[in-house]
Image (tube, rainbow, N blue to C red; front, side):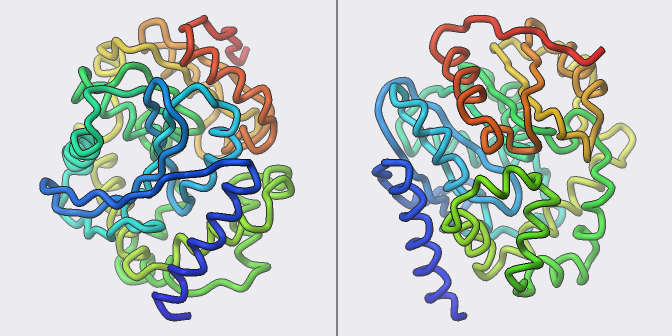
Length: 316
């Protein structure tokens, strides 16, 4: 499939996903100056602004079921670099934390927003934690869903092969048969979550990773992330002191089966270092809103709307 055909197919599949949930998104491509990159933003609704950051190999359409349950907010989801309609990036020798701060603050500047609530999933949750520390005036609150990459010290051992030069980019870039791709999603998100996903969401997720440069973007990002996490002192693993310096309201929501990368007990201990952070384990896997949408959306809506404390259900 040519790049133009893949882009057209992705847009069509994504539009069907949003329509399935009764949503009418507004899309724009934001040309940033520093860093020099184009980032696609999809916006739905009005009210308090909430910026959504998806995880690796996913796409903005994954937020559709959750956004449909948040009608009183201005929901803005961006395609992360190399995904969907955003430019690819070569992260070799790039400080991921500094780069993501510059990118996200530039996005907010282009949108005319002084500050936002953040909802981040997986890698997006890690970037949300970084921004809460490095540009605290831009973050009103943070909901971190799923293991936040290496920010809490998760080893992510199964992903290290994708960071290897040559082989990682190749594995990420080669087309995958439908059965193989469904297996990848099931391993990442869980069998039940996969069963709840509309076929167009599965298709949009796959096509969002088929643009030129996706493999290089993710492989070089992972390589730098692991090199930083392995350094002494670690660059991307948040220290106890850093977690204790976060002052925004924070909710950490993990699926009960989301222990592939880090145990729930260890994640709970790390979250407890954030002053006043709420930690809750919800039914499901790495994207718990696909497993139990009503409960997940209720927790997030209440947290964003009024700051009502979430139940503190830490693993025993």
